Image (cartoon, rainbow, N blue to C red; front, top):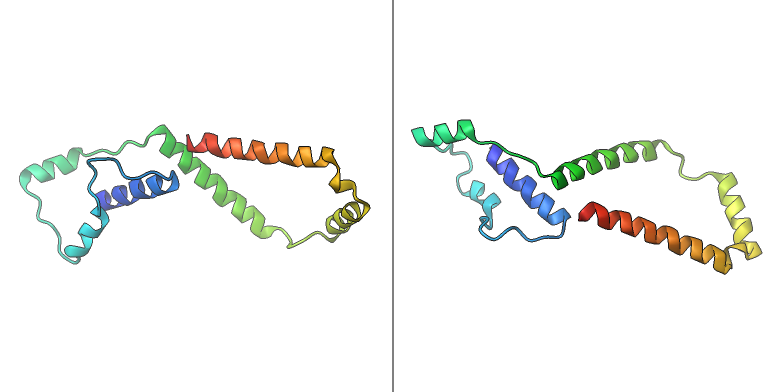
Length: 127
């Protein structure tokens, strides 16, 4: 059961990172459990010894993804407490839009710079 969770975690991380499983990994390893559903494997004495010494070590990238997921979950909880809209901000944005203030080159450059910064941060998290 624990090994299946490790395999699924590895597959999830590979999927999140947009990578294929490593060469030499067992394709369809998750489906292996479907074939023997409800049957417990009887480990050999050597298998019991190996199971007692098996360890899992997370890479730095996996730890970063774990922290990122925790941060994302926290942000979602905060977001869910926010109102759907703030009328005073909507009215202020509407007034700026109607006045043409948001169509200037300065505003476009500012928005492009912020979007670029977000993209760079996302790329850093994946690398």
